[in-house]
Length: 124
Image 1 (cartoon, helix red, strand yellow):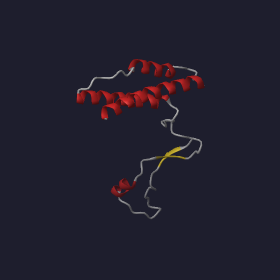
Image 2: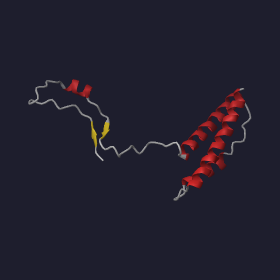
Image 3: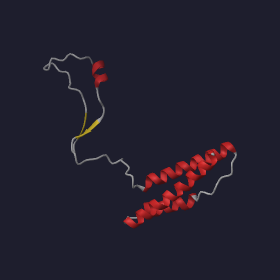
Image 4: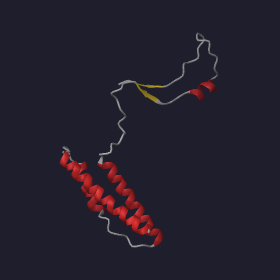
């Protein structure tokens, strides 16, 4: 894997370019380039990740809390501890079998569906 920084050609006496330091600082690109086609950044989340579903569930629970606090509604039952326990049950596994992954995804989707229904009921 080869990773390099994009930098403009250094103006030197041999290449005939007369550029001031200010102009060089403005044109400098500080991004990274990956030259190997088999490499990929490690911070990409994939759709089957249970982490994304858990984060979405937590965000929905935060929205429900805010709506209930702002409008003085009762807080519905959300099974936060059980949902967190179900998520950690898969996250702590060394071997993630397809059966365990499917089960965890289904559980998180059911928690999300319940939370979305609560939000829809509050907004109607």
